[in-house]
Length: 253
Length: 244
Image 1 (cartoon, each protein chain N blue to C red):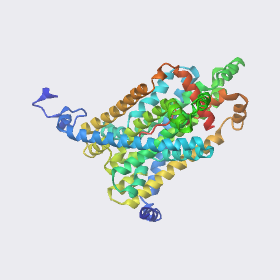
Image 2: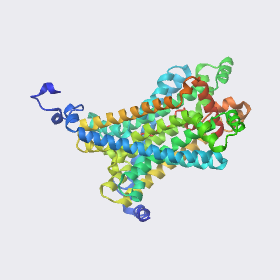
Image 3: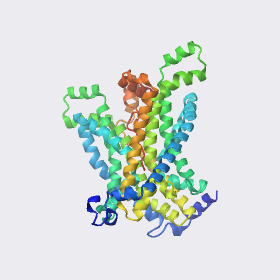
Image 4: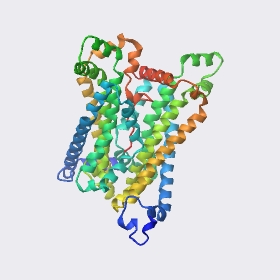
C-alpha cells in the first residue's frame, strides 16, 4: 500500500506536472504522437482496404498481413529503427514503428468488413442501378462500419501502447515517466506513471466505444435489421475480437 | 567474415550481422534464450491453469460471462510497460513481475478461446453423452474437452506467440530474456546484439507456433478428416450468438 500512497503523493505534487519533463508535457507528447500516427495509418490503410474490399481482390494480402506482425516484438522494431540511420532524425523511428503496428489491424478489419457485408444487399443495390462509388459510400461502408471501427479500436490500443514503449528507445511520451522512475529506483514515480498510462489507455478505449455508437451510420436500424434477418446475419456481424479465428488484436508490445 | 582476417573485425566496425559476435557471446545468447523460453512457458502454463476454471465459470453462470470477459479485455488494454510497472511494488524487481503480467495478458486470449471451444460442442453430442449415462465431470473430460481442443490449442498458439514478443519488455526489471540483450545493445549502440536478439525472438515465436500446431495434430487426429471450413463457420456463429 506504500506504493499507492507514494504514487498518490507523486500525482498530487504540482511540480511533477510542470515543465519539460512534467506529466502534462509527456501527456501532450503521447497524445500528439498517437494521434498523428493513427491518422497516418488510417490514411494509408483505409483507402487501400476499402478499395480492395470493393473490388473483392487482395484478400490473402490483407489477412496474412495481420498474421505477419504477430511474431515481431514491438520493442525490437523500435530499437532496430533507432539504431538504423533513421535514428538520427528525431522522432522518425517512433513514428514509423507506430504506423507499422497500426496498419495491419486497420487494413485487415476494414477489408473483412467490406467482404462480409451482406452480398444479397450489395447485389440488390447494384440491381437498383447504383454506381460503384454510390455502392461503396451508401451500402458497403455503412455495412462494414462495425468491423472498420473494431480495426480502429485495435489500432488505437496498439498505438497508445507502442507510444509508451517509445520511452524505452529514448522517445517522449508518458512512458518516459515510468522509465525515469526505474532509472532512479523511484517506485512512487514508476507506479504514478503506470497509472497515468493505464488511465489514458482505458479512457481512449472508452471514448472510441462511445464514438462508435454515436457515429454509427445505421444507428438504431442495425438492431432491427439483425433480428429481422435471422441467424445468418448475426454470425456475419460477429465482433471480430470474440471470434477465435477472427482478426483479433494480438499484442506484441 | 573470416575472409578478412587482416581487416578490422565486424565487432569493431559495428556491423548488423556479425559472426564473431555469435561465436564470442554464445553463452550470453544461450542464457538469454533459456530465460526467455522459461518465462514464456511458465506464463502460458499458469495462464492456462487459471483460464480454464474461468471459462468454465463463464459458461456455467450466465451472469459470470460478462464480467469475466469484460475484466480480461480491460486488462488487455493496459500497455505492458505500465502493467509491469504497476506490478513492481507488489513483487519487487523479480521475474514474478514479468510472469504475472504475461499471465494476465494471456488470460484474455485463453478464456475467449476455451469458452468458444466449449460452446461450439454440438448440443446433440452433449445430449447423446448424457443419455449414455455420462456425469458432468466425465462429460467435460471425455466429450467436451476433446471437442474443444482445436479452439483451445488455437488460443494457446496465439497466446504463446504474443507472450514471446511481450517478454522482451520484461527488460525494464531485468527479466526480459532476449529483451535484456536488445536493451543493452541499444544502450551500447551495439547493432549485432540487437539484431541477433530480435531475430532469435521471432524465430522462437515461429518455432513455438509450429510445435504447438504439430501437437494439436497429434492430439486431435480426427479433425484432419473433417471439413475445416464448416466447423469454423459454425463456431463463429455460436460465439457470435453467445457474445451478442
